[in-house]
Image 1 (cartoon, rainbow, N blue to C red):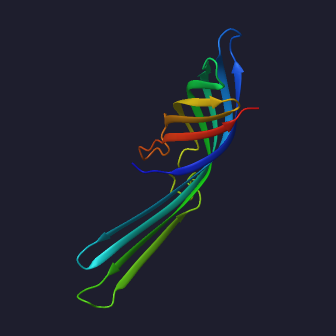
Image 2: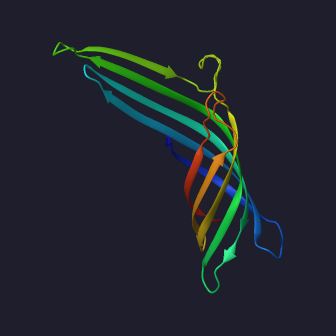
Image 3: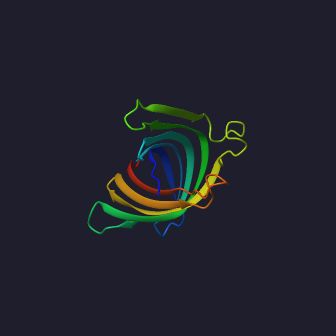
Length: 183
C-alpha cells in the first residue's frame, strides 16, 4: 500500500517481426530514479511519537515487449497495445529513518528521545545486518500507446515476479505514464 514516486529516461527500439503484419518486438533501456517520503505521528496521553523515513533508489531497466501497431484509417493517429517483461538491476539505494518520542507528564517540561538510523546502501550485506535487498528483479507489464504522427503518450501497468527483499514480501507494482517521440 506504500507509494514511491519515480521518473525515468530511456530509449526503445521496435523491430518489425513480419513484413505483412504490424507486429513489433520492442527492446529498451532506461534509468529510473525512485524516491519515498513517509511521515507518521501518533499521540498518546502523555507522549507524542513522530516517525519520518526517506529513501531513494537508482535502477537500470530493460523492458522487452510485443507491440501491435493499429493505424486509424484516414488520420495521423494510431493505437499500440503492448505486453512484455521487465528486467531490472537496482544500482543503488539508501534510506534514513528518524524516530522522535516526546514525553510530558502533567505539564512538566517535555523529555525528547530521538534516534536516527541511516542505511547507506540497501544492497550491501555489511550495512544491512547480513540481509541485503535483491539487486536483480524481473516482472511483467501491459499497456498502450496513443500515437499522433511522431509523438506518443502511453500508459502501462506492471508487477514484479521477484521480491525486492527476501525477508519481506515486497514486490513493486508500477503504473507508468510515458511521453515520447519517434525518430
